[in-house]
Length: 335
Image 1: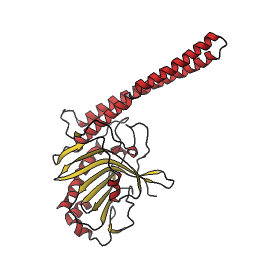
Image 2: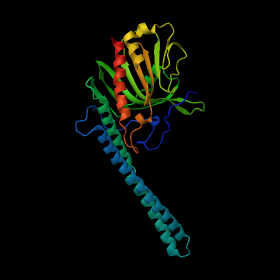
Image 3: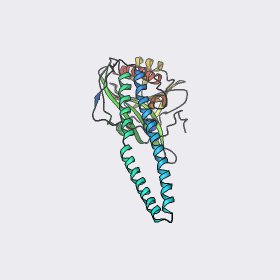
C-alpha cells in the first residue's frame, strides 16, 4: 500500500474538530453570494473572535454536562440507598428521588440537545463565508455563489477516473463561479475506497476544482505533481501508459496521445514550474475532452476548521495563491 499522509484522517464526533475524512456540509436556509468582508476587521481577527466564542460555549456546555452527570450519579446512589432501607418512608423517598432524577435528565437533554449543535452550525457557516470571501477576493472571480446544502455527485468524481472504486464521497463548501469567462466548481472533498478488510480508506482529501477546456482528446491524461511523500497518487491507471516522468512530476495518458501537442507548450511550461510544498502535499490533474479537474491534496492544517488551537492563516493564504495560480494554468487549455 502507498504511504499515507501525515493527516490522521480519523473521524471524530465533534463536527468542529472533525478531520476532513468526515466532511459534511453545514446546513443553511439558502444559497448566498460569496463576497469580500467589508467590516474593516482583519481576517485573522474575525476568525479568532468566532473561534473563541464557540470555544467558550463548548467549555461551558462541557462543564455543565459534567456537573449534571455528577449530580445524577449522586442522586441515583442516594435513591438506591433509600429504596433498600427497611423504613417504608425511606423507600418511598428513594423512588421519588429516582423518578425526579429521571425527569430531570430528560428535561436537561431536551433543553440542551440543540444548543451546542446550533452554535456549531452557525460557526461553520460563518467560517466558510469568511474563508471564501478571503480566498476569492481577486476581481478575476465573478458571480460567486455557495449553497451549504449542496453536495457533489459521486459520479462527477468517478468520471475523472483518478481513483479506482470510490465507495463514498464527502463534500462541503461547494463554490461556483466564473473565472476568465469560464464556469468553475470548487469544493472540499474526501473520496473513499474499500481497503483490504472492506474498511473505508481515504483515497483523496483536499480541494477539488472542475474547469472546462477546449481540447479534443481521444482518451485521457493524468498529470501528477508529487510532494515529499507519495500521497493520494492516482490508482485508476490500468489503461494508461507513462508518457513522461521527472523527479516530482509524472504524466500518464492513453497510449498514442502526443501530450505536448495536445496540451501545448504554454501549459506544459507553466505546469512544470508549479511546485508542491508545505500544506499542499500532492496534485493530480485529470484532463479529457472538454474537462479539466484539479485534485489538490491538503493536510489537516488546511482542511480542519480551527477550534481548540489558535487559527493559523498561513495554510489558507497558501491555498488562495495556489488556487488562482492553477486556474491561470488550466485556463491555457482554452487558448
